[in-house]
Image (cartoon, rainbow, N blue to C red):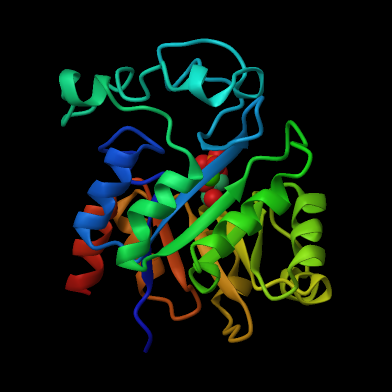
Length: 251
Ligand code: G3P
Ligand code: CA
């Protein structure tokens, strides 16, 4: 039986500032199989790694990512807001900045871990973001290690049209009646499913060799154990990769 992979969600967001280099470095040290991250586009069309369309929640600034040039965004701390986390270090985390996707690729390329790039195109379309992401990944020769995902179907279809060989998955938050038929009809590689769908519906217990099922975001120990007991899941995405890796290695 194949070992289920563990991906650190936004790095290791349960213990480190989300979507930061320090968080991704931490996930690498834990031995994750991959990381998940979110990309948006700045005013000067740079790919930056941040979950929200605004910088308000995760930095000490305010406003939309799309309204800032990269050098302006780099003024803000991407770590200082996470003082509720146990490992908080004001000096170090305070100096952490929103990373570019390029900086993350530079960091992980020597490790050759897998990378799930989620295009946050469901609120703003970010014209041309699909081309930019594909081009950057190609520059690093990282194509085989990347799976692209989005909640926004037009973005997924565009990625597929531009680069038919890219691994692309649809992010789904609600239950579909015929998920595998749908994935096949779109020519996608997999589905990224919200955990409750997979835990509650028996159809995800079936074997689906042709497609990858990656489940997000699973933090509860019992739920992780339930998923680890199945052989139909390729990957578990979690905010606490250290705990999930320990559970997997024990099972
Ligand atoms: O890619 C899985 C998961 O990250 C999707 O939800 O809101 O955490 O980006 P969100
Ligand atoms: Ca995400």
